[in-house]
Amino acid sequence: MAKKAKKKAEAVESDKVPFQVRFDRDLHQELVKLSEQTGISVNQLVQGMCRGALSSAQVGQWNEFGMMEGDKPTRFLISKPAKGCVWFGSKGIFDSDVPEITDRGTFWFGIDIRERGDVHFGVR
Image (cartoon, rainbow, N blue to C red):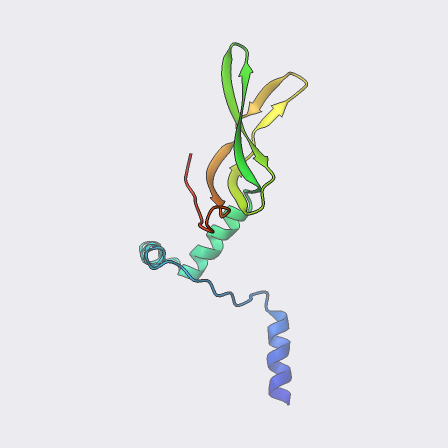
């Protein structure tokens, strides 16, 4: 009984949780290669990449909104509500008081699983 109680107490104190993910073979090989090149464990790489990506996650579908800025057309990024979509980067900022685009936004990559259940991503 004492061993079970001790294990349970240790588990409560840890802020780490087990998490199993399946990767495509080629992606796993790329992670292992990067791990070997950097001396950073695969676990630390994945955790660091997740933290970095989550801090810039934008829920919904990425959408470029076009408008005129003076006499030239310009575009900036906005999110459109859509289940099954998330993109990573920053939304554009439009200052309606001026009116002017103060930041066009940045698109790193997006995931859209609405079509055929596939994950699509790309960099713009």
